[in-house]
Image (tube, rainbow, N blue to C red; front, side):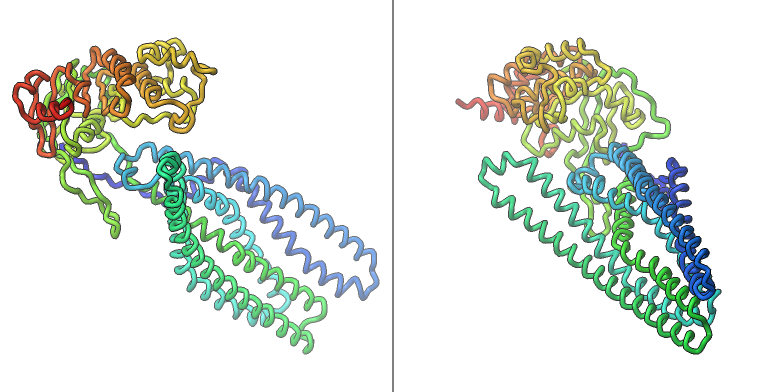
Length: 592
């Protein structure tokens, strides 16, 4: 069956981003109400100041002055409590939205095909999961608050100013279009600068992740200086990108600050002239200046948080990029595979890996790794794949559980086209033991239990015994609760391999794939693990990829694969008798 075309998915829209507020809408609306009340409180002060100057001071009504002073104190206390709620619960809303977005992003990453991870670095993905979502949190909290407060303050201040003198208000507002025009002109440049900065942060994280994970190799080869140079190179690119973003921010801040200063200057001179010509009185002049300050406050606030807004919108854009990436999908009529017997058939299968075009992001196939391959593996038999590197042996193993889609042809198991089965049920029937064992940071018990998360302690111990690792585990100070360290760094290669074998014993699949499972081990350890693998292979369809031909001599069938396809197939004795490629490989390995 040909490689499936990518179905168009629902693109993550702004509406979807806004929907993250829904589970927290009660807290969010209370937060917005508090912001509204804070804005209303601020609008009271200039009006009270005007009344005190115009009425109470000249009429010697000290009682009213004290009364309104107490009122103002009450307003300030109320503002304090409201701001406390805004600062605490507002940020909590942001953090909870961030957690929801991170959950959805991680869940989406679990469903992306292997090809996505072939093209994207781990550190870059981690940067999007952590750094970008942190910026979105700040925007989720401060964005709506500042938009609401700024809008209310601008509208409220305009109304109050217009009540004092509409002509004076319109004169001052003539400066506003220049501020808006200046900000809009710089926005495009700031978008590009902040996006470039985000990309470089991802590259720094990727460089760090690789260097830290490979610290033992770099130390062993005394390449610390080389790693430092690599890191410095990516760090310099980040600094350069960040400098450009700060340059744009500097232009924005300085330009808008100048324009707001001009606005204040225009307000001061024009209101002074109106007071001089007795168009307004002293109290109105005071209120006018206070409202102008209040009017400038939201403008300055928006200027001050513009970097935060820019970071937040950039984070949202990068969040949407991953969320819009194509997921692995099952056919609409896909069925549960239930328990498969393991009759595997390759029918004229062709496969090539894809590369991503850096200019337009489109996927382009490269030269086929597998070309028009057909073969049959009967259930319960052990079949070994041998041959030179690059012949597609590991790729064949990855096609059976549908880690990748074939370009053409069909793979069937028990006469079921694997594309008609759900991926989860298909993979439930397949166990894999690879050369590069991956252990999760946790205990030995947790790593074995990955084969069956519902397994009892007795089942875990039984699986460990079958993998010949139980005695080793019991010699450790904490037994099955021993921490393995990151990627199993506290264990030897043989111990890690046997834990991975125990994991498969616990899974108990009908199809077993062994991809160079012992090639990285010494001969003594290999003999121990080979016994475990032979026990594991009993009663299962077993596909073995091996370079050490001594490990597959007893296979039911050996298939010699090259980049031109299947060259030979038969038992060990039959292939030696043919005196072909297999015999040549065997004689080379055992030439002594």
